[in-house]
Length: 312
Image 1 (cartoon, rainbow, N blue to C red):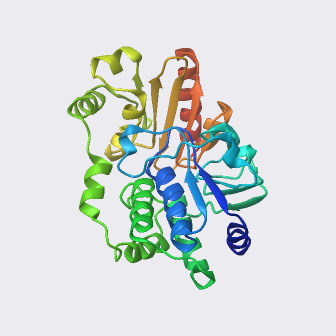
Image 2 (cartoon, rainbow, N blue to C red):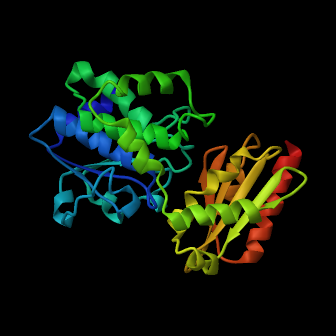
C-alpha cells in the first residue's frame, strides 16, 4: 500500500491534505509533516493543508485557504481521521482520488486507497515510516517535516507514556531528533497552559467523582467553563489529568458545548471504545470519544463504563 501511495503522489501536480475536526498535535503533525515531505521531494507540486484551525496549535502550522476549483483533478489525502463525519472541510470528496492514512480502527473504510495501521502510536509515526519506505524512491525529509512529525508522536503518546508507545516509536523519535529543530521550544508550546486552565485543572482534581470500583467521572458545564474563562477544546486538554490516580481503572469527562456534550473516555486497561460506539462515537481501545445531548445520557455512559470495568 505504501508503494501505491508513493506512485499516486508522483502522478498528481496538486495535492490537498485534510485531517480531523477539533485537531490535536498528531492531526497537525501528520498532515503538515506529510505536506512538507512532499514539498521537499517534489518542489514543482502544489501542496495544500486545509481544515478549521485551532489557535492553540498555530505554533505547529497554519492552514491554507483555497478555492473549490483547486480540487479539480487534485489528489486528496486525509490523515488521522477514522470516519468521514470527522473530516475537517467537507470538500475532501471533490478531488480526483482520495487516500486515507490512519491508525484508528477502520470502521469507515472510505477512500480509493487506504493505509490503516492500528498498531502505530500515531499517524505521525506512520508518515515517518512512509518516508523511510520511500526515500529510495525520491522522498526527502526536511527539518520542518521532522519537527511536525516529532511533535505529533509526542502528543499522541503522551510524551511516550501511553501503552501505544513501542520500540519502533522510540527508534523513529530517536532518528527525528537529529534534524534541526528545538525540542525545548516544541515542548514549551505543546504543554503550556493559561493560568485559568491550570486553575480549572486544580478544580478538577478537587471535585472529580471517584468510585470504589476504580471509575471516575468529571462534568464540566458551560457555567464552569465561563467561570474559568475556558473553551471546550482547552478543557479537553485536561482529560489525562486523572491518569495518575492510584486505583483508577477508567474515567470519563463530560464537557458541555452549546449544542451537545462531548464525552471523553480514558482507560488504564478495560477496552472502552465499544462504549463510544454505542453513543455514535469511536476511537482507540483505551482512548475514545462520543457526543451526547443530555445529562441523563451521561448517567447512561457511566453505567456502561461500570459494566465494562466490572467485566474486566
